[in-house]
Picture: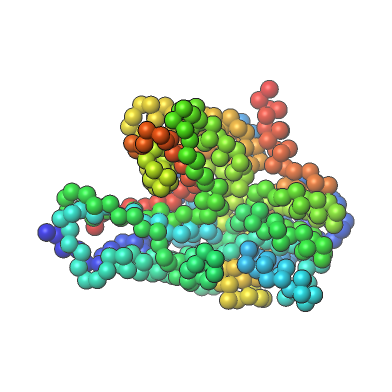
Length: 280
Length: 185
């Protein structure tokens, strides 16, 4: 059994919080170049250039791309052969967030209670998902989630009779209602199936996948492409000022579901779609 | 061509700004988000004085990241404006002339803007590192306990903005998209 000290987990979470907030991922830079080539509207092109310049400044000056440095969402894949030593795993993760948001000069945007609303001043608690897998690997993914886009996300329990057309209609309705609010161009994560909670989790998980990769199943790979085109036909455009580039990618994740249900969750991210991963 | 506008935002300047205009704003502006807005409106309801004079002023909806040593401010892009909608009409009725944010506004806000003569600007959402370069000084003037949500007095130079809703109620989120579709015909 491999032993892993919690201090290494804290260190890794801290580093990932900072990296994800300072550095735009390579796949999004590629999507920006593709979008510029397809974009005919001058205002839209101009805004894509501004966002690229912003990412360059953030990287070169080691500062956050966005002032909303997010609530830290942490996904762990824990090999069942790994023995965590030196303290509480959960506390080690919160400590990593605490250190990352303080040392990285990230904004502390979390309140301890949704109604009382007192800022915890260290960006904890993080939202943590654990997945126990075979083997002795330990994988950490940190995805700081901004709420401009999170607030525009929705979930609906469709009927089986609504089918794939119902899914498409709902996704387009969510993006249309969001309009300029989530800082388009956006990345759209969609979870289909499971239960009420599972669909939301899948939508969030879909946002972790590189925008260069399509769903493995052809049915959903095609649906991703079709929805991306349909979203970009809406004309919302970068910042909602008009244009083709409303979304850079659509990522779908699915799971088996009940004979009576068709849950669909749409989780919206801004272009930054921050996430970083490490194996310890 | 961008219009250069210097604070304070007088009635003449408000009238000169039209929907879709690119603006470079220079001068003193104030920051406030959800929690600060609630306190400002509570003060107005109690008939008390606000922590700064809002007459002919502009509020920027922003909660910046902490500044690096030697810099006035951290990253500082706009937050989504609709969360401030319920607090905005009383501020406009008390002399506020402009707001900077991103995203849609309610009919109640737009109607009060028309009545009182005010402008809603968008800053580029997501371009927070770039926007911060326009902020030359920053000072917390109220509600320090709110952290990132405290009210700051900023001096900005050539802050790039777009007039999204002008004092006549014209809305660039509608017009810009219509203009785009016209280019496809």
